[in-house]
Length: 273
View 1 (cartoon, one colour):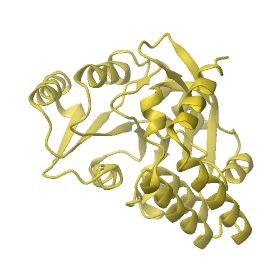
View 2: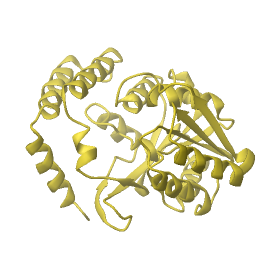
View 3: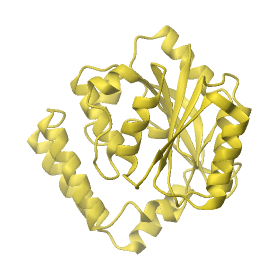
View 4: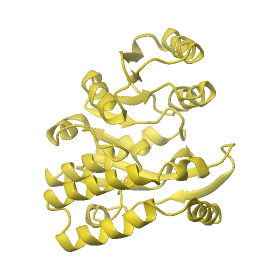
């Protein structure tokens, strides 16, 4: 089963992180992708361009680079990138994360044996070095559990998913919804009766730390989350009562003082299995 890997990169990415990501999805995989589509979301700096050129020379036609003149944001970049992917199965990846060696092999096996549209997995979160795992972001396995989870939380770890291109397009593709492009997509796919599954083990290592938590707070983040909740309500994913509950709880959390965010960070560090 041929598949594409879809990624987007922008100017804040570190060269070392990008190189490590590419090594993990090509050099180390037991099953290699037929295509890697990289959307360049606006101008980059020279070292990052040089690294991309190095991989383009190494991979040849396997590596499809889609440059955008201006930074359009993740949702728009992935929307454009999806149209350039040649295969029906597409694996998402972030350019600072690390795919475990058997990730693609295990996800392809699920698509071969199950009638599904999206297959995700758990992810492990690390600080500084890959071996320093501090926590695991777990998500439910079966469709009914995932759809129930969707009412209050994102049921997929976005950089871990593999999905059918046709199912994503049927649901309207990625759309602009700051910080919640993927959550919005899963809701619309559920509305279109897509079938979901999560592998119950980590297949991606994600970078973690206080900086990641810090980005998930503030008024703009809270307002964007309210927009998401309105979308869930309009799709019939949640009831009005659930909408009010979600907005009240999440709005308060997003506007919590930095000290609370730091405390949450410390608690997460103590969740190592």
